[in-house]
Image (cartoon, rainbow, N blue to C red; front, side, top):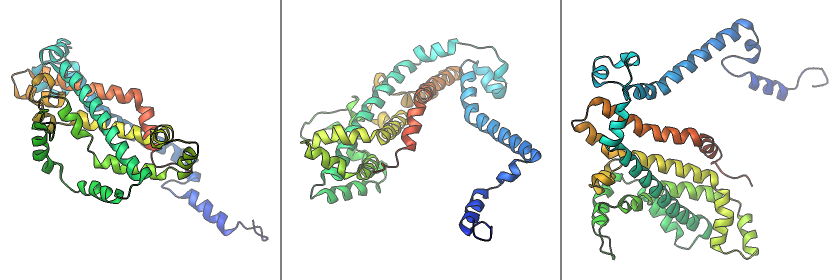
Length: 309
């Protein structure tokens, strides 16, 4: 307050800033405004629930409905009797169970490969900082401007005949795991996060006699759990929906993931009900995984911006 009893200009500006918005705090206290505001919020919440859960719920009901009901009355399947045998036919007859296991193996291996390569490259560029580091960093950034399709032919030829080793990785999980580690985006993201870690922590570890490996495992990685969680989430999602590369290098049906098996199932003579059951089973696993670990994922995304010194 000033000597005249009037609020200062700074306080008036702060009060005006608090009042900014579609509906001010004073208006929200009015009964009619509060009622309409609640109604609008409820309608928006219902729309979001229908938009988000509607396709998933319809897929769940279609997976236990007959093919005739799905074709003739797509929105009337809610009132048709359940046919639980579709799920069993999709799991065993369409080999979706085996494909899901292959998908999990590919996702775990690709994620491990991504973490090993990305952490090593980001630690080298951000912490160790060799003389030729800027050249390597520029080369990594340059790969971000190349379309992924361009690298398919040389990468496929490399998989057929590995340099120096002269072995072929065709129809092996290694053909998917190894290329997944070469992610320039993940290297750049991790490097930016490692740059935000205060150098005093690493200098203190050096004074205590810690070497580069120990600094990585005892200082850098524990502080980087949020961004590592984000990298894991992105790698799992990317590996789960990858289609073209697994189709090229995994011609053996016993090794193919669910992303490759579903189009083959649709192109075959399988009934539509079995196809919908296979689709539901393929999307059920990632939804359950996210529902279980959603707090860890969201916490990692929210705290991945950096570290306060």
